[in-house]
Image (cartoon, rainbow, N blue to C red; front, side, top):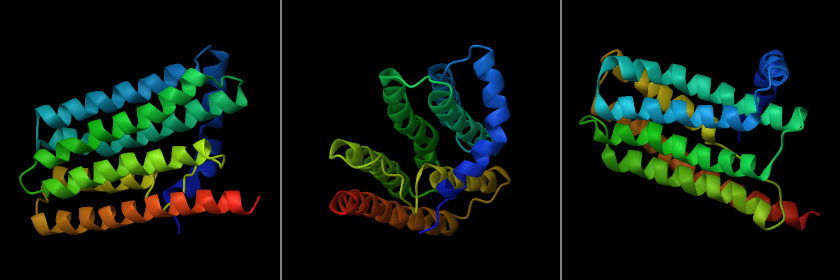
Length: 203
C-alpha cells in the first residue's frame, strides 16, 4: 500500500547538498540524531505545558518536518559518509519511539480529543517500529512497510495540530482521523511481520 515513506529518496536528493556541507564541517550522524530527539522532546514539552494553545500546535507541523529532514540527513551521513556505528543504530531506533511518544501523547490531554485513541496510536506506533526491527532479528531486512509508518503518523498529527491551532476543535473529526490512524497502524504491524517472514521464505 502507498505510504509517504516511498517519497524518501526524492526528499534525500533535495537534502544531499546540505548533508555534504555538514559532513565537510565535521558534523556527525549521531549529533544530528540527538538533535532530532531534543527538538522533539522540547516540542512535546511545549504541547504538555500549554495544552490547546495555538502557537505550540501550529509549530508542530514545522517541527515534524524538521525532524523528518534531520532523520533523513543522519541516515545519509551514516551511509554515504562512512559514519555507521552501533551507537548510531541504537540512537536511531530509540530516538524514533521516544520522539513519537513525546510529540503525540500530549494530544491525549486535550478535552476534544479521544484519549484512548491517541494512546492506542502511540502504543501501536511503538509495536510497529519494534516489528520492523524484529525483521532484522530473524534474518530479514529492517521492515518499513506501510500503510502507516513514521512519516504517515507525522502527517496525521501535524495536520491535526494545524487544524487545532486554527481553532477547529470538533470532537467527531478527531475521532474519525485518529480512528482511521489506529486501523492503519494495526495493518502496518501485520504487513511488516508478514513481509519479513515472506522475505525469508523467498530466499
